[in-house]
Length: 362
Image (cartoon, rainbow, N blue to C red; front, side):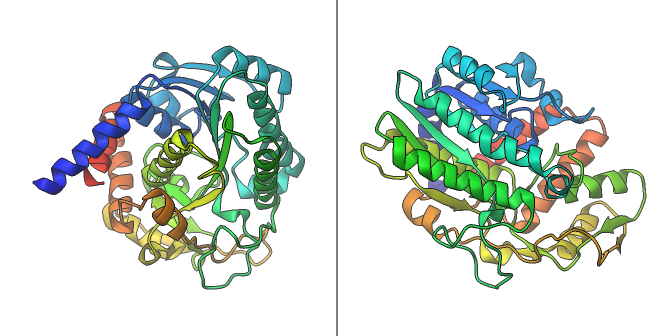
């Protein structure tokens, strides 16, 4: 009972921090952005979003009716003038920058668009924040793929070299360099900047193209075999709520710091025991939603990293953050969300219930 009470007290404190804060989320129409928006609505933040309209006919943004529950502007972050006007108009206290071209295989098809969105879009955002005549805190979200991947077994730490084989990974590494440059050149008590590097996130409400769990769900719904391109690839899978909780923890610490503390990059990933292969994930899914999978590996396919893992020691030590849901819990919660929606459950209530369960487990 005492442990439960402490968790609830921590939740009340966290909600108190966000109550009434003016928070800008870029990419609020995306999968992670929609979950993050719902978390912050529950914590009483005054939210504004900047993003492109959802790409899919089915999106979590629409399922949660976020267009009617928060303010937002549809614009392209490559449009520096439009972005600056919107940022100036809202004048945020805290910015969580998630807008990006986030798909590896699409980056091969359109590398210029990937770099323009991920690198120059971030430059445009940071410049618009630099022009604000008020203090502002910014967390720039990148990816676990920012590291020069040597396919080694040890987990990447924040001081390991940046790199990137594919255009997406390279663009995100470049985004980290941009973030570091603005932090060193223009960072101050008035403009605080940090970056967050998360692993492979999964959860209910993702219908993106070329992403493993949405592809699995589409196959299961159609009663077809799940086609797995790289069954042996290792990834740091985690439920979407875990890294989002990390982003919010970092933003709180950064915003309240009286010095330059926390103005750096942080990894958010699962515990080492929860880093698994694509095959392991597929087999875990079909324990909850019966089906079968097939290996469709193509030796001539574009390069995708074979092994990725993150060290979370820095976030644990400096932020007091740790992942909450293990791999099996993550799979169970994810598949339950999709199956319940398929059976007619309210997506908004399901999402709220999972957020409440996550917070109670912290």
